[in-house]
Image 1 (cartoon, rainbow, N blue to C red):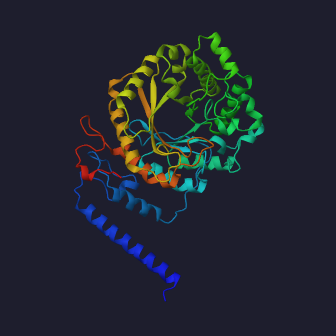
Image 2 (cartoon, rainbow, N blue to C red):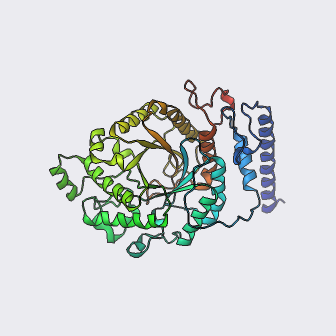
Image 3 (tube, one colour):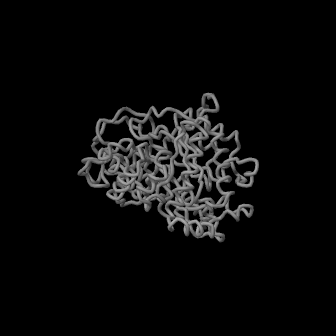
Length: 440
């Protein structure tokens, strides 16, 4: 009689055989494909030679290279000097490619960063955007904001050293207006909510609001004394204008919610730039989209910050992005950032990253980046590859970071080597047969 253990062994053996057959077939198909670019075998995960033409990336190459990299034995790292968190963007010949680490849920441990930072660098990343949220070791009156799993100061020093070792520039991100659930959920700060029932947005008129976010920003800036850029968030300020303080202000200012947003944003951007000479401010752009260029220019925000135009859709309206660039140019902004998504942008409880969706999003951004010659007065500083862990502080987790690493590899390599020609079909690299395109 067949025992349960014997049955399980038989099932496991069958799965191994099926996997082996699929691997052999995959390798056979890959060998038959003609290479349209001269690239060292296996260089997908390492700094390889210069690519002569657009690169054709095959799914089997990505997966095999990833597994080969994951199975490498750990090599002791050379000691590095702690402290500095900035490195020159030597590897980038164009706009910077910055990987966004969203730390508001299942934040990676430092020992995991030791593995992924070298990978980020080898794939073509120039820096890391750290969205701390409650993972920063706030102290003093802000200690209550710390997660029980927050990094220590020693952890952050090690993260900075790892970034320097791998030539990755660190950009800290602290939300100053919306997405402040991790702050406003605490009873101590209930009175600073824009809408009493919801903890997401700050009341910009309460005297304690600006003092609170300035304290948060100051602690993070002090921890990153060499940071050249600082991202202050400021996206999706839900419910703005609904508090009694805001209604009173709107009554005296012709109901201009856009101007109300700008007053707070300018105040914080000016604080950041005055606190440390030379630091440049970034903010998400969605709250600016409905504000007239004239109103933005009148506020002076264009002299203090650069907007990040973000879009995570598979079929992106590239013409619409062009319209936004034109509007921001009219408003006086001298530079912009773009933001794509390598994970966390498709479903609030997504478990597996849809590779084709993320690839199409980046191919659309490549098309937009190729069109920047239309705007000679606007500098494209770089693109932020966002990897959201949660939609908001209190929502469930999206797919975890390790699940999204293959997608990140594909997206970084697409930006580094991919070339979407003006007349090419979105979804292909240059003149590549459809069957050779890396799709999911």
